[in-house]
Structure formats: C-alpha cells, structure tokens
Length: 299
Image 1: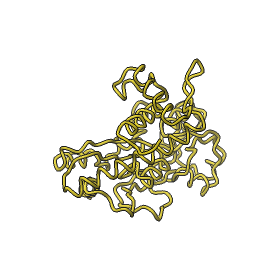
Image 2 (image 1 turned 45 degrees about the vertical axis):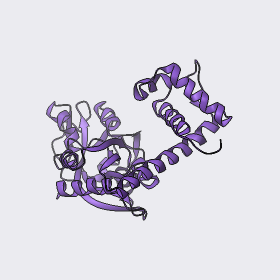
Image 3 (image 1 turned 30 degrees about the vertical axis):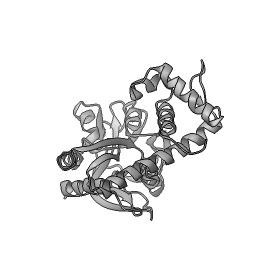
Image 4 (image 1 turned 135 degrees about the vertical axis):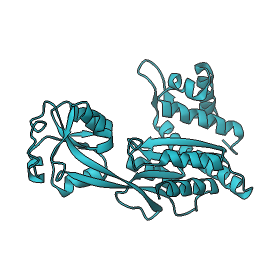
C-alpha cells in the first residue's frame, strides 16, 4: 500500500463505519453517502490492499478474517490520528477538535449525576470542540480509554488498572427487585437474607462488574444472564427472576406498580463511579478541561 494518503484514511473511515453499523445500508445515514458510493469506497479499499475484507449478500454482511484484522488495525490507526490532531491543537493552544467520552449505561436518571452540567460548563469554555458521547460496558470503556479510542471514561469502579488514573464522581445504589407475579413481590416482611436469595432464580450481568463480583462474594447462582441493565429489567419484569437494578432506573417501574424492592435494608449494594483517563500520555488540553468540569460539577 505504500505511504498512507488522505484518500486511504477516508476509505478506512468508511470501512470502519460500515463495520460499526453492521452493513452498508445501515451506514448510509451515518456517513451521509449513498450505498452505491459506500460500496465503491469499500471495493476501492479492497483493490488497494489486494484483500477481500467482507462478504455481502443474502446471508447479510460479514467480515472475512482479513477484514477483522484490518478493522482492529484501523481502530488503532484512527485513534492515533485523532490523538495526533488533539496534540497539535494543544501545541497551538486552541480549544478545538474532537473529544470522545464513554459513559456507563443508565446513569442519566441518577440524581447524583452531574454529567449534563459538566457538558454545559465545558461547552461554554470550548464551543469549537465536537463532543462525542459513547455508552458501553465497563470492559469496553476501560479498553477504549487504554487504547486511546476514548479520551475519558465514566463507569463503576471494579478492578483498577495500573494504566489508568481514577477520579471519584458519584455513587449508585443497587436494590434487589421482584415483579408482580413473583412470590417475593407481595412479601412485605423484609426478612429475606442473602442465604434466601441463593435459593431464588437470579438474573445478573454476564461481564466483570460489581454485579458479578457480588454474585461470587455472596455465592449467588445466576439462573439467567444479561448484557446490560435493560436486559436485567426485562428478565425481572417477566416474574421468573429477581435481579439487582439501580434504584433511580427502577423508580418508574416501582411507581407503576410493576416492581418492588425486596428487603431493601439487607439485599443491596453500592457502586462507586469514577472518571478515568490514561496515565501516559497525559490527557490532552481539551480532555483535561472536560475532566475538570466533571470534578467541579460533582464536587
């Protein structure tokens, strides 16, 4: 391929968008390009590389093994170019460019969360910066910050990485909930203990998190697993399982009479959320301004 040109970077960005969107048709809106143009760009990239990157047809869109490797390399390359652009802005002391911040799911309804206020303050200080907000799991956020894909991450503290620095922001309380047609819904005794919960069908998160740590610590058996809080809520609302949910997220279901917290004085745990960034290289000037806005808002 020789030296990378602006055309190569543009083709790689199109390729990444197609993969992220799950196909060329889905990427039309994201790229603001016609599908025929997107298809031509991907074909041009394949021709330049001498590789078949994806299969498209009735079976749907799928990456080839070479396409998977190129996608991983493209993520690193584009993250590096974005970091270079941000550093160049720092050299010129200009508050412009892009800022990528990843946030753990279902935080906006937490009354302790002041991320929106931090965004407002940041916008006043850096109106020319394009802010990109992402939502993901703890592992995705940590890996994205370490790899340079995200400048900052906001998620529950679980197991600290030596590569990252952490600033405490806010807390979240997780209670155990049961739905209307579950036997524990109408039990108002509040006498259930952790030993009782071991005999119940529990829906829990399937990735490393405070939720998973709790199931190991309390020797709880997961009868169903979920990839996010929305999935946990769906399983609990079925009445077939009980599960832990953030109190602020579950409030609407409780007020509607669909869920009830079980033994809230006993069956609960708390999560501490932090803002994380890479220790090295140091955060860009733009990232540091947003980080400070977060700290000021949650102080």
